[in-house]
Image (cartoon, rainbow, N blue to C red; front, side, top):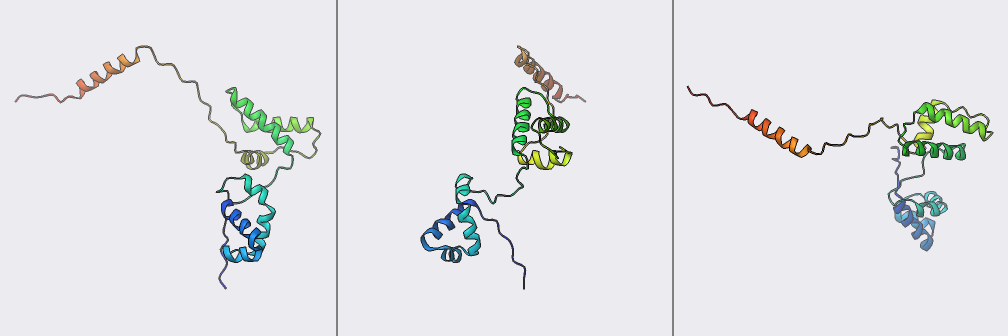
Length: 164
């Protein structure tokens, strides 16, 4: 027997199945949308969450945070640092997280690199930003200088006629 391909269904599709199930029952909705009845039951349980997400959302994947209050505070710190123009390294994030965990009396929080990169930063959609400098202001006569440079380039690019 051939393996069954798994499908990911969008929230819009799930909501249609839920509405159909409310009118006709779970089995009829499952037959109509060509899905398992258990999927329809699961979607009906998730109805309130499905109403709040965008229509193209596929599923509620990803692990929940073990220490959500800690991560909230660390995320606020990162955002504050970035809005003031300061760079934030993963080392800084980890150190701040360890300090906050100690302050909140959280035991067994190690704040290692895997927590920082693969859990915390992915959950909060954070990325490492390259440091950039503030751009210099253009001089007041920059348009005039550009025009002079263009005429210079045009004069240099004209072919020289040789008489022979």
